[in-house]
Image: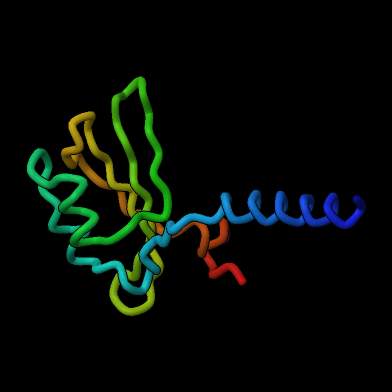
Amino acid sequence: MRKSVGLSLVSLVSLLVSSCATNYSPTPYWLVPEQALYSLKPGVTTKDDVLRNVGEPLMRSYFPRQNQEVWDYSYLQGSAMRMAAYVYFDGSGRYLYSAHVLDPAYWNVDGGVSR
């Protein structure tokens, strides 16, 4: 009896752990093409275009009151400046605009590199 309870517990834990696994794989910052981010056209570029040309975002956020979705990317500007891009879409999935800032995950409040 104890052996079957132990086996059942191990099976349950394995099932729970495996159900948390996903195939989510954001595009690493060093592979996000900077030019692709700057070539997006408002009202023309779609989410599928962005996925194909820029890659999988780090995070997707939806704002129901504005009926907008924002995708976050991290990328290199030039050869060494780590940047963040926030790409905004309307409710129909068309590109609206983007904001580009120093990547807050990389730069600290004093303007230096976080270590």
